[in-house]
Length: 422
Ligand code: PLP
Image (cartoon, rainbow, N blue to C red; front, side):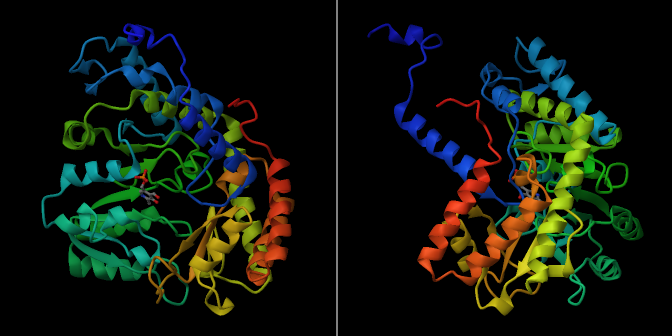
């Protein structure tokens, strides 16, 4: 066995322990109904690229300007990803290297802000994201954070109020973007406010990137100074981040990503992002994104018709929030109950929530994954009824067990990853 290391790249010695865990996760993804608004099922080609030999290559720098030799093929990978991304989003510049959405945001902060500069962003409780100013995040530690809330009545962004706060705070950066906001975000209104106070505007489209690419949500490109995104949510690609901006910011942003906040790019992930952009450029992606919203509205209506209060009264996008205050159940209890029958979603704070983020008064429901599976209005009706039944019978173990079987049966009717052999 002395020389066995020499066979390293030729023998496929299975890690039995890891294989067993992988098999369990495959079975979970095949048998549960995923309503987490930020999750999706990628294509096999995306998975293949992520699991490819591109992982072996160090490529610090950018195409044509690397710190390592041997990058000619890798340059082709990144150039193609950039070309496809710019075509998809109609952008003049993009950086496809950020390892994640938070990394993309961090690079923007590094590129234009100094310590203690002011940021105006959406309150976390109203739908904002941790990386927009939470006190545990570096934004909260190094910058002066001001927040805007949704209107307490409509539970939608009150642009007049954002403007008022912007005039008082005089931020250097305004962030438009959210993790749990079910309405269209008006980037043009944010642009006007930013111009009014001389602030930069960053749109974080992590959640709606796919909807924008599909043309079913207004775009922030050409309006915001910087657009950051994730590639793994509605865009349906590998786990990763993305930045788009006007060409004039290219030097600033490239430097902030590398060497500012990252080292070597994950070339296998960039290869998979490239595949994802190609898939999203296909006309069928438009149909997919329209269907996500159709399903979201349909599922929302089932819940609403059954007497559940929907935050802001409805949805324009891939997700909606259900306020459980009137149901005598917390978001935590609801998500645990639903998980026990195989319906996977997350507890979520709702605007002006009095409960803490570990308990919450609400749940967030999203339809990107079930739409990828091919589910439609009829299935949304069924899933809505299952959710309502589970919440109403949460203390009835027999009823929940029977429902669990129905959930499994429904998931099996829309199989995923049947070509993966474990
Ligand atoms: N920005 C927003 C608005 C998000 O909702 C998320 C993730 O949920 C992120 C950024 C972070 O993305 P990542 O988990 O890839 O860092």
